[in-house]
Image 1 (cartoon, rainbow, N blue to C red):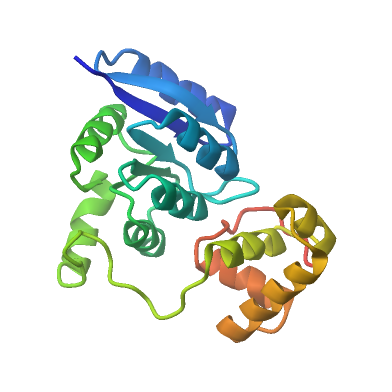
Image 2 (image 1 turned 90 degrees about the vertical axis):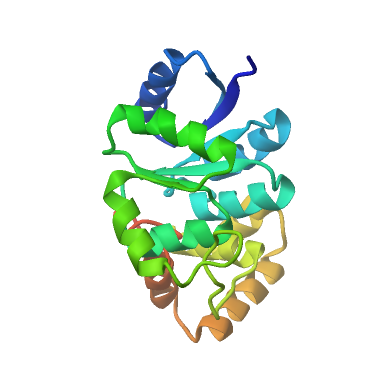
Length: 225
């Protein structure tokens, strides 16, 4: 029997270790890789092509939402299962809209994680017990034919989202340029486009938007420049 291959993406070593040990007792599931940042998750998914990626939200360099976007653009058949400490409607909506097949919290019973992997691998939407009833009741009429949320008006490009996260994490233009391997002038253009598109005209406002949109979490240490 072919085992379900899984990539674990979480920036906390202890979380990944616990998940790996949990899945180690399952005869039909195999952990093939671990990623500490969203960018590593994208790179390793392209290399290893796992059946399922268990994705955290708040990770350095590239957050889970943008990592999911890039993974599904490159490998549409990959199933993304979000494993987060947060169950806010805004987080759930964004990931399902992006194309994730499941969302469970880290507080879920251990057996729920294994079950979620099996279900999303089959192509079924799966939500943890603390999310499922609320989500389906609220969004019964707002899902499209693929089980995804209908699109929202404001859309950021993949690069704009990357730049916004780095701005919100406190990086200066020069640091962002180095991280993304683009010119400082290009960073400045992206920053300007973000401000115009979101109608926000200062760094503090962009940071608040990034938090409210789930691009970074509110407990991340921020430095406003």
